[in-house]
Image (cartoon, rainbow, N blue to C red; front, side):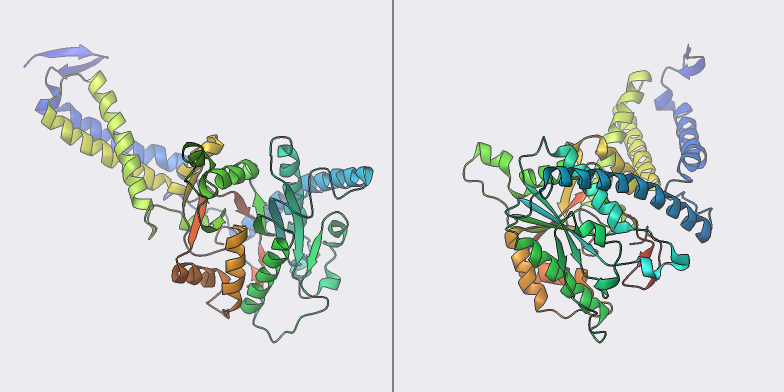
Length: 418
């Protein structure tokens, strides 16, 4: 057996065949990756298997409050500028419409200020409205669609909802209750009725699409272009229609733009997750083998198969340990790389309803009674399954949950859970 020096190391001319150097390399690679590099990189990376919550609940809440205040200052400035433009133009706004809109965006809101300890006012509604105004203004010159932005007030005591008052001057507002509601109605049933009311009111504006957003869902900067691409490519299927006039719009009932990140991992009951993990493993494992074979030229077909399996396993474990949610962030490099899949159950912070789908949901959901452990999201999923409706979800999330106080659970919660 002859040996030759390559890159400062001694290699046998049939190193893979003899099995001397390769196992040591593989063991070293695995050890450095999973015991050194990934723990250092991922220790503060939420949703990775290495993530450690090193801060106590009080420190975490303080950090989130600080972030909240920074967003609030930024978006109050946007609202101020928009208000000035409304006054100057003496109309509903330079980029928005109130009737016959293509997409009616409605922010569903309740007051959370009166529940905060120490009188702190988070003003989630102000943040979300300001963010949406900024995003719509930035894309106004590039979009062919007409947008309307509405607020739907479903607060129990509307007369004391002070945060909403300055926003009602510049945005059309739907009011669910003219005075305090009947306290005998179950809070989950109330939430469902509120949701139906907001959806109906949006559709009454002759909206082709009703986009319902809860007031503690903060939009991502890519929202509007991804929304339009989703409508064009996955609902109306315009690209396919150009090649075949027989292609009709899909019968989509709703599209979700948010799902709790803790439920977006590879280990899931959703059908696409494990095949996605296998695909990542196979593609990057194969690339590793190609690179290895290029630099270590002496190999045989049988040994290459073993090496391929080792590399595929390595890439699969890396993806699993880093976490699907974190890897999905790479899809934000382009509007074209966002993923559209079938929608799982749970949670309704940001939902797009094509007009016909919205009318169907209003009819079906009105016939359902919600209660504890059977909220409107579970009712929606039952309706979808029972009637065979098509529901889609866009990933990664286009909204961030910022609410520390849950009006439904009447307490402070971890915003990363919901």
